[in-house]
Image (cartoon, rainbow, N blue to C red; front, side):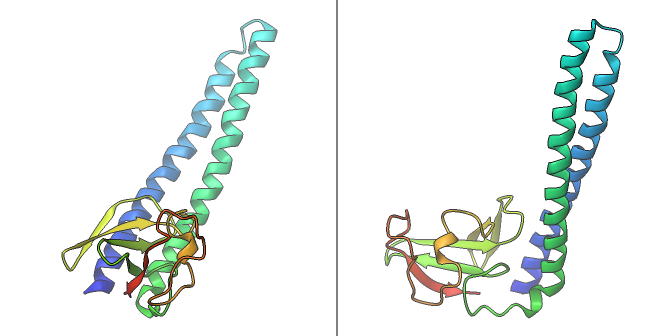
Amino acid sequence: MLVNTKESLIKKHYEELTNMLLVAEKSISEAQKEANYHIGAMQSRYDTFKEEAQYLVDAQKIRCNELKLLIHKTSDLLQNISSIKPDNIKEGVCFTLTDGTEQKHFFIIPSGLGGVMNVKDRKYLCVSENAPVIKPFLGKKLNEYADDYEHPLENFYILEIL
């Protein structure tokens, strides 16, 4: 059941990343068209528009490459989710942190686009490995605390890994 829920959420994030890539690719085309539109303007104005458009094109190309990498990592995670062993905190696991009175639940995925996954009447926040709130817990096992002592969850330890 948990594997199916994880797969469903990963697919949702995969689709969202794919849509983001399409938007970024469209932005590249629109920025280039905008630059070409100003060809008849004064030369100095045209140069400014051309520079701005080129900056936007380059920024979107970088974004496209980042999205393609995330899509690839998300696809790999989707294919391997059933074989991931919940022995420590890593990509593809759900885990619960507690300080004895409060519990916080997380699911680590490549995109870190947020969202909540409901499992066993719990809401797991979807985060990436780079999320500052969980980064100090990566590689940790049950009952271990974060490495960082000035961390917002410094009093929390790992209660459960799924």
